[in-house]
Image 1: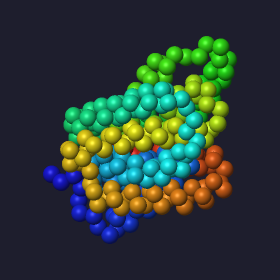
Image 2: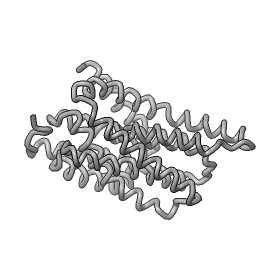
Image 3: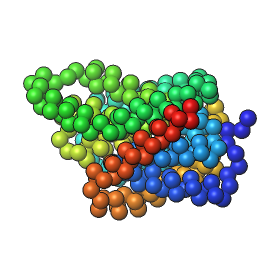
Image 4: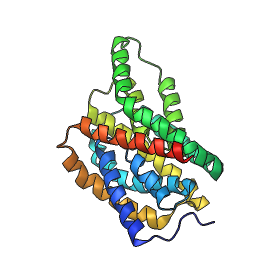
Length: 260
């Protein structure tokens, strides 16, 4: 059974437009996968291939934002190396776990994965603020690196398996690094997300479950969206962008639960 039908002009236009919007959302508030992943399924791509294709396309698009943040990376080399290795290992493990998940099981998991990602997106900011407050009140006793490594490993495995919401999860846990500059925190988050999503592509390549015409088209659309939409979206209050993504996330989650 083919992983995806031939790419028609209509589906190509829909995927390009969706990836354009998703790339812009990811650059500003996150949550682009709530739009791009379901669109791949709507256009006939099998769920497993849709996940791998979406991961590949948005990883390519995300490289641009990672490069833009490179000067803001401000963390000691030891911690950076440890978190990078953990992210690569977790992303690889998660993607292999996905490949050993049957198509029927993954299809049944989709609503629950979207629900988890939706909850993380909607309440992630509040959780991050709570962690920051907790961290300030306990600053005299900084957490051991092993706790951060364990959290990053869990996030990385989830990221390799599905991925939606990992940016918000990482921003929450990275508050314990006492990084004061939000740009520095975003830089580290973007770099680690690039490690997770990038290494996850390797097993997908060997398994042959990436729909390349769709992936290439969406990568171009996502990269352009990340550049152009982000500049426009910065003029809109972030709360409005987040509310828009939340409505889309709830709608997509509800649809897949009803669809069964």
